[in-house]
Image 1: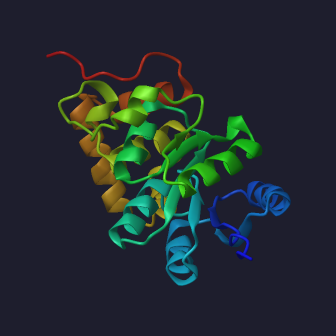
Image 2 (image 1 turned 135 degrees about the vertical axis):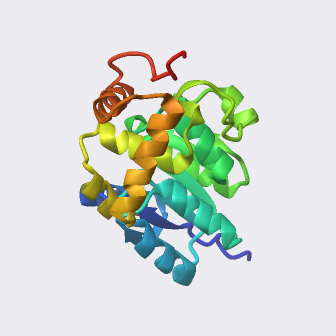
Length: 225
């Protein structure tokens, strides 16, 4: 008589305890085991390397570090693990960059927990899974970031993270602490963002970042000369 299949072991990376607890309760009902959890990228990386889960469910915004960096680090380790992004952010640029970094799937928290279980099972079968908010074209042909593309896409992954944190009201010190970087490094990123987007002052930078995050207008574009 064949043995029943082993339950799927999932590691949850999310900085909200209530989200982690809700997922754990849901997974218990679905026969999925949460083998570990973390709220920051550095702790998650250390534990994942030790526990070797089948699937890592990761938010892009974490207490320390970023989900995108964690995806890149895990792919660099060549672990046989499936990486599934579960986040609030449905912006196309984030979907593209996560898939290009090595994510096996991407869905938003608006779609509910049951969809997460469906996504976990899909990626375990070797499929690429995306939620309803993601364009099918992105999944079929995930694009590498291209500096020649206009607007916000000209920013690097790290610069985009800093730009969004500025738009969410974080200052240089808070961003440095969240990303585990020095204040000098964040200041340099701010200057690079200003240069790339041709913003003349700190006020223009903050205004553009706010509009990008809160959708008050179209995404910032470089000013014409």
